[in-house]
Amino acid sequence: MNFYCANTDFKKADIIICGVPYDGTSSFRPGSRFAPDAIRSVSYQIESYSPYQQKDLRNRKICDMGNIPLPFGDKQLALNIIESFTKKLISKRKKLVAIGGEHLISLPIIKNYHKLFSDLAVIQLDAHSNLIDSHRGEKFSHATIMRRTAEIVGFDSLYQMGIRSCLSEDFMLPKRKENMCMFDFSKSDGVIENLNGRHIYLTVDLDVLDPSIFPGAGRPEPGGVTYKDLIDLLKHFKTLNIVGADVVELSPHYDATGVSNVVAASVVKEIALLI
Ligand code: MN
Image (cartoon, rainbow, N blue to C red):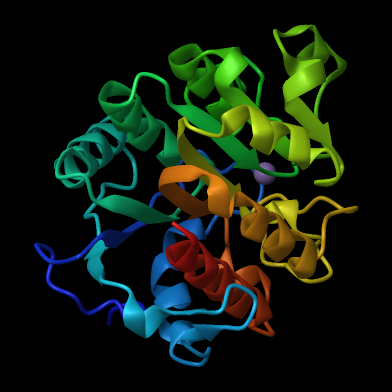
């Protein structure tokens, strides 16, 4: 089953959706490997038109490539497969919208984009800074993903928004006082001004949303933004050159109501319309 309206042939498509069903380092509430299929199945229950952006999925050329076949236990192998699979799409200058999976899946994708665009900046919407150097001995983990990302693109080029779970040590890292927007998106205007003209990768950890509207998070964190806040921010991004994006960290079975799946599908839709 494809994401709703994502039925264009690969060659003709501008935007590629692919599922990245990996959750091997999830430390709290695993299960995000089931998210891509959960999101696709509810995508048929949302409208193709976005009144927020006044755009329609039916007018976009989107190809859903399905899920990348990944092992569950071998992390390095999984990362290698994600890197080589997405490299092929990105080298053909397609805009990728990857559906996780846990947050570590962003790393091989960002690596590919950075090889192609040396000026790449990363915007991360997330409750968590994910800046620690290692998590229980693991250098590559959903909890270290932004530290590893900063090592690729540079701390100057990592912009973090909505952060409300971090360590005091984070603020000792370069540019965190300027480039880490705490709690909400109120300081995003300056960030957007800085980033005009650059190639941007957008990574959306859905736990940036408040758990009251998104309880299906792998690591829920109280005090989050509303769905409207998120959409307003995405609308502000319309002047940016976003070349790829991901939506990660939905763990579907932790929300028995299924509402989190609908929220996630709506975010994927808005991003596919934005980029
Ligand atoms: Mn997070």
